[in-house]
Image: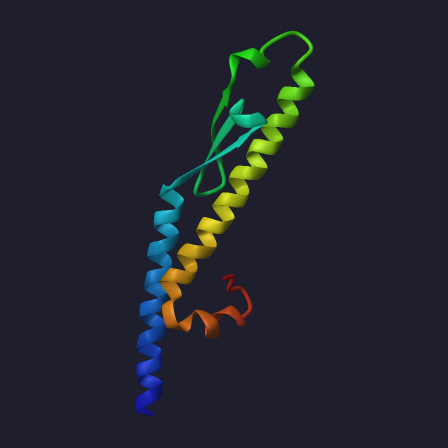
Length: 109
């Protein structure tokens, strides 16, 4: 039974680390780009779009479709980076229990 108590303490510590990591992630931002840097978007850690920056050369009549495509691509780039950052933070927070928790429903690593 002594081992069970230790395991419970480890689980509680890991839960606190995961909560801390989620809070840090929510406060972070990631940047995604497309078109060779002509479009840049910034996502908050929550996934919310915070900023879009367009190269002025794009702002010409008839470029609307290109701009829209580049914004979507920049967003996809930023989302991929955000997902990777989230996975790494959760992996770091879980520490030695990451392998154990990875197989549990609702836990993504």
